[in-house]
Structures are given as C-alpha cells and as structure tokens.
Image 1 (cartoon, one colour):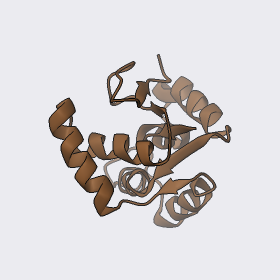
Image 2 (cartoon, rainbow, N blue to C red):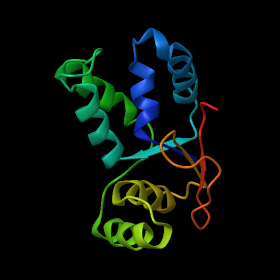
Image 3 (spheres, rainbow, N blue to C red):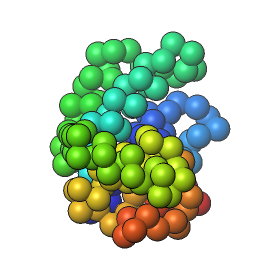
Length: 135
C-alpha cells in the first residue's frame, strides 16, 4: 500500500494550466486502489483547497464531497501514539513535525512508500521510502 500526501490531492483538483501534467498524474494515482492517507492529509487538503487566496479555490461543499470520496481509501486517525512517534521522528530525521506525522501515519498503516513532492525523493525513513511521483 502507498500513502498519499496532500499535494497529490491538491494537484488532482488543480485547474492551473501550468499544473496540467501534474493534475493528470495525480488523477492517475488516485485511480489506483492500493492507496492510504490520514486525517492530517484530509485536513490539510480542506484548508489549502478552500483557501481564499488560492486562484482555483473550491467551495466548502465541494471540498467536503471530495473528502468523503477520498475516504474510500484507508484513513489513519491522528492518535497520541502517532504524535509521540512523530515527535521522535522529527528529531531523528531532522524534518518538520508535520512531515514526521505523515511518515508515522504511513508506518502505522503498513505503507512502505509515501508519495510526496514535499519530502526528499528516495529518502528512507527507517523502512518508509519517499517517492516523488512527479519526477
């Protein structure tokens, strides 16, 4: 199973002509069934997708419908255990807490791979490898 970071969801709804290829790739990824995500990813998606300063912002109702559709994948809740593991990981790997929480949520779900444009492509976080699907 592969864990999907927020950027994949955001590119999937992008109407920016400069992001056309990334939007296609993101939608191809989301057509797969072997994906997982976390509540954190869904929260970040909502905040960024509806942000007033976003050129192609979507309305609350549309964002909620999309989040409901993304729940077809396994979704990891943010737990105190994940938080503690993320605190350890952010120190161990020298990454932000939010990135560490993504890594640790993916680990709990049994994902060996995180699809992300935001982390270092190819980096291994003690058994969870990051892949940038846009390279």
